[in-house]
Image (tube, helix red, strand yellow):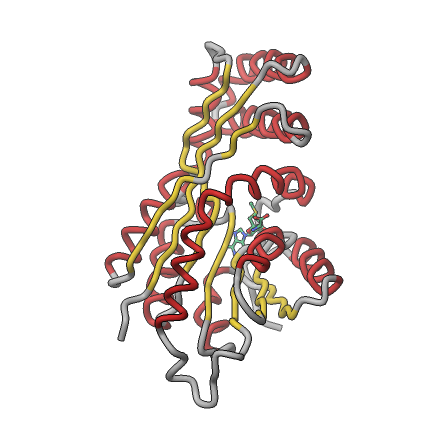
Length: 288
Ligand SMILES: C[S@@+](CC[C@H](N)C(=O)[O-])C[C@H]1O[C@@H](n2cnc3c(N)ncnc32)[C@H](O)[C@@H]1O
């Protein structure tokens, strides 16, 4: 079996379930990017792949597929038949994504691998129309992995739709005097080592443009207020921020715990609102 990178910090499946309704609402803002992608396909008749035709399935590679939320949302916004290549380095999450997709009758191919396998995956799945997508992944990659993705996409001439990458903006209303220190430590944690963190969209846009790709970026913030799904998402969001802040800055332990206690009370009283900045990026390869 192929060696693959193993997650050193597995993402919790229940966190992915909690964020799904906020993600779906946020992605309504980037529907124009999907319109642009569809126009791009329409304006370029299938060519270059022997025997290919517009009736063939679009091949969509979903990097960091997790439990399959990106496919679940995006499939209904893309035209025609689709074959989804779900790639993740976490076997447990990938199994859930594949089971859910197959239960819906979707055409899916699981790939247990790291993102560095994209070149191989694309070479194994030639098609007239392809897309490489991801959601909530880019910030977890290293700068080098992002540069490499851009290179492979340009080499293969494949469009990219990178959804829901955090951009670092977190506004809590009402504010608390410890927000800047706890949220700042969380942000530093996201940039540990070589991780792109909240620079990811800028880095991806730069790397893609260097290869002649046309890049569009649209803000897709979460607005968390009084929706039915808001409270459990917000509670988990706050707890995860406090944990990561303490891991990164153990000297902040007392402050982070005090902050979390206060913020959870705010939540329970229904008086906390949050804006969490994200962005979606569409990259279209040059014609020719
Ligand atoms: C925050 S989750 C997002 C999952 C899903 N796309 C969604 O929107 O719900 C990030 C996913 O990327 C996967 N992942 C992170 N780094 C990866 C890498 N280098 N190669 C492959 N998968 C990776 C994780 O296992 C996880 O499933």
